[in-house]
Length: 233
Ligand code: ADE
Image 1: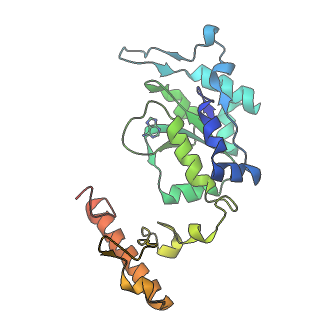
Image 2 (image 1 turned 60 degrees about the horizontal axis):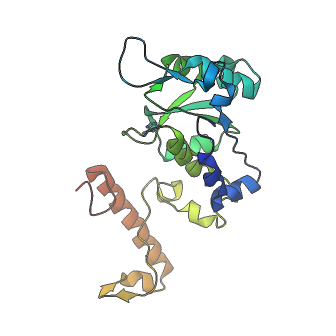
Image 3 (image 1 turned 45 degrees about the vertical axis):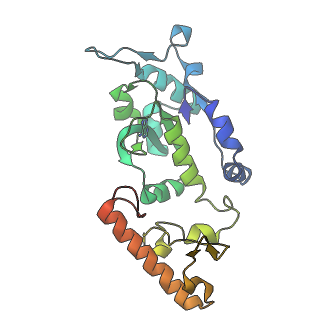
């Protein structure tokens, strides 16, 4: 993880499922790009050529951070491991991309700030550009945490109860559909009853009902953009 705000990740690393993954052998290393800058005064960004608002992360700063941390020619790094830049215009993060990333032995995430990256960073150092949604965050750090969270929970031992990951939303077990609805006690609350089938003890019928609910939700997402009754309407 290359960032200008490594302290953001201290909290993240303490969260239970992340801490489990780290105890299980996964590593999360934060590289402070400012500590590697060749420029004076800790400078990492600059005004855009051609004018315009905001500041742009400099290519020489990213080069120095990659070179300093990995000890290799930065352009060659992406041939050895995926180097993903977090940016709003990138490939949208979805279950397929998360599964792909979770299968990688190692991953480098590059978080930008300010207006964005000098395009040469994307052209020469990145293997991927990843977006967590079509909206602009003030930096890539939260997006990188989203990527790490989704990837780490795919790794064995992270969740503590493996079956919950098997049948979760968008899994192969649910044929890529969203998860079915869950209910717990009380069976009735303010007149809102849990569906009878779930109280029936008929495992096959329960399974059939769940699959059907999953499919209905999936169809709703495709039609209206949300698995739930409210929202995109
Ligand atoms: N950096 C700023 N906005 C972002 C987004 N939506 N996804 C990933 N990285 C970002």
